Image 1 (spheres, rainbow over the protein chains, first blue to last red):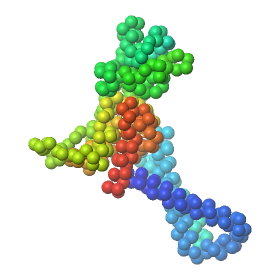
Image 2 (cartoon, chains in turn blue, orange):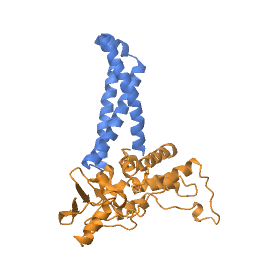
Image 3 (cartoon, rainbow over the protein chains, first blue to last red):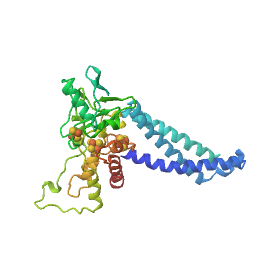
Image 4 (tube, each protein chain N blue to C red):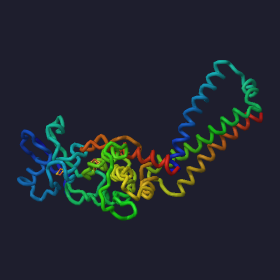
Length: 107
Length: 229
Ligand code: SF4
Ligand code: SF4
Ligand code: FES
């Protein structure tokens, strides 16, 4: 149940976050922002840091629960050891994402 | 018409005359009476009440006593019959329904009166109340197992409770006379329960009684989400 709730809530967060993320990319590319200009906007911007931290966390959790379900249903991979594997992959995804956001903030 | 039946020794083929208003069960009965007396199959009421005659008819689970051959026979004029999917086969077209009903009890399928005693007076449950309507919508299940045989999740996870058991649980969750609500909601939660349902509605599509187990399971998910989260 908790996993299910996590999956639905992160899906809702991701739907908004992915849209915002894509819109940002389109804006940056079409507006012809340079790397320096982008960094100028993200450096020290708590809003962007928070946004991407939440985004990465949601993506990590959503991915972990999703992999767990797909593996259990299609491959029959079940059990605590697999759960730990998916959790580790999710945590790694989230950590890398947050690390990247922190890099932009701190650059 | 050509009839292929999955039997213990493999696929067997029979020829049966096509008749007007012939049901699939009529065909099986004719084969057993006149060509293969050792063919095992199951039926009782012949009028869509008992739920014992379900089989896979040309790949789709159906109640055979209420299924006209003319509606389901293939373009090639062949009728192919197999035992219900997702259940152990006892012999020929007869499956062991024990796992199916065992899951009903695991899903809390028994009515438990509040305070453990059935009150002396009849309970008055207004027919128009929303809860009563939800319960009424699912109550006509005949336990045929068609939905269970049509659900992918059952085939992927042997522990999955399945649509019929959870449809039953949902009628009881909506029964205001029932006293075992919390335990039942716990029993239908998690990987073996409602949270594994993909809402593909195969069960709802196939249910010969026109019930909506998929909707019942969605109701369980909603109730658990807002109630116990
Ligand atoms: S809606 Fe759920 S219970 Fe019904 S067939 Fe699909 S997965 Fe199975
Ligand atoms: S819900 Fe419908 S298909 Fe499933 S067992 Fe009951 S009557 Fe049969
Ligand atoms: S024989 Fe009873 S439902 Fe078909």
